[in-house]
Length: 238
Length: 63
Image (cartoon, chains in turn orange, cyan):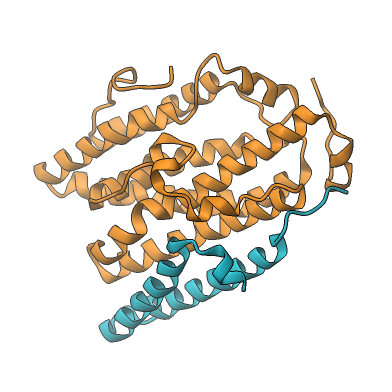
């Protein structure tokens, strides 16, 4: 196991596998950061239920663009140009979850509640990681992601509490996004995940992170009066 | 030291300006919650900025 902490100046001395893995994970992270706004800006900015919600959609997008910027800077400094993801069609996103379009307010709410929470989990993987420039950008990004999660939770809860119709819409959106959230953690037997851990770039296995997520989200759904979807139904990455 | 990817700094600076402009527009709207005209102008301002970013013509931004 690699336990050192390295700076940009040490990067050239690292093994090719380390360089490849770091470049790869930064590219995916950048793609996910900008992939969010590409799902909801076009449709939700004009369609959010109030003007204040419209501005919060814009603020959320601004924060995600800023997260992209920070990740792109870390990647660019090691010679990895991630700018191509800014113009990438949704269908070509690295992660399946970002390959569609959000067209309803309940999907937008649940996306924040469940998918931004996965984003938080992915970022937490880099806490104490071996590449210090990546570690340094995390605190502000995670703080903002927590805000997105809370907003998504509050808007989902508003729907649930609005009556049977709202609750049904919320449950339908949860059913849709929950399995996608679980898939975002990747294959349980991923070899790449093992190598990330070997190099100190991540600290949990895909399955452990997924299980932690399920343990966190399940009780919240129950407390909200929603059902926990079948975690095996409709999954692509087991 | 590794060689920095082309346009890294320029893109960083450009996006930082974009983010600041968006936050400025949002703040303007949120601080005038009771004035629907100011809110609408702020939303329109955000839309115009975000439309450009969603188009993703990076080379145009940096030229």
